[in-house]
Image 1 (tube, rainbow, N blue to C red):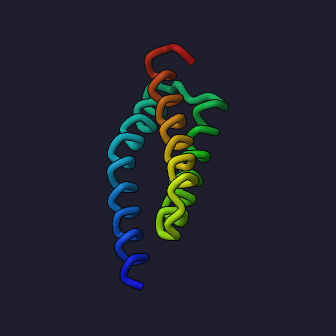
Image 2: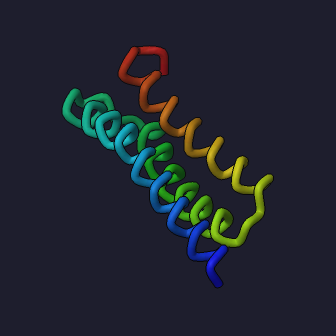
Image 3: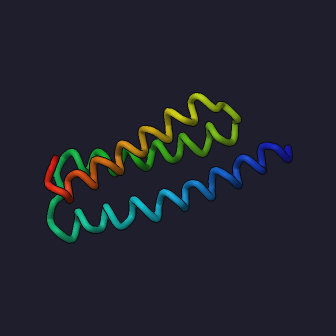
Amino acid sequence: DADGAYRLSNAHRKAIETLVVVAPLALTVSLLGLGTAATATAAVVFFWSRLAHAAIYTAGVPVLRTVAFAIGFGCQATLALRILGFV
């Protein structure tokens, strides 16, 4: 339906917006040799949280969408904190 297509389009746009943040973080962790089990887990969980976010967003479930987004944000924070030397 049109609403689902609209939500999927929005989910795609949001995925691109977060990729612009997480890709440089992940590349920086890798290039600086800062990879740990925590950063590897954060990268994997980020991927799955974004996949879940897209599916949930398309389905129109706002509360779960927020949870999936927050999990992805936490993964980004883990990478950033590792670069800054806090993790």
